[in-house]
Length: 66
Image 1: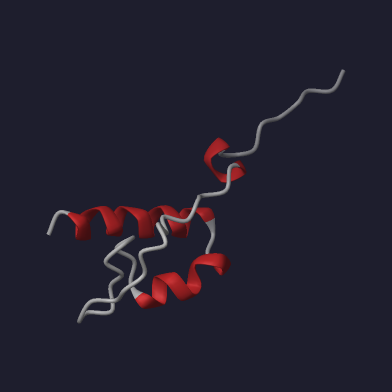
Image 2: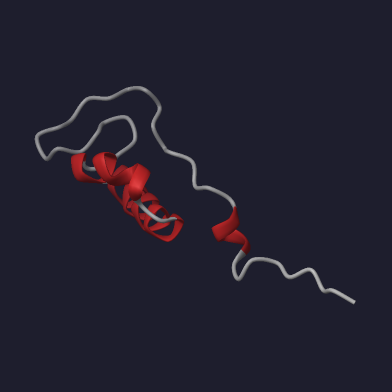
């Protein structure tokens, strides 16, 4: 009897969506005023792991409230 195993983390199975809202404009600190990612975070998004993307999204949330 085979047992279906779920991925080690269900979060890793679902791709993390980009926060881009197509309102791209960088402020004086190279942070997008639309999604709150830094220029480097935007450039590296596609090659980042889901875990790295979640860290970026948490940083974006902190930038929003400032």
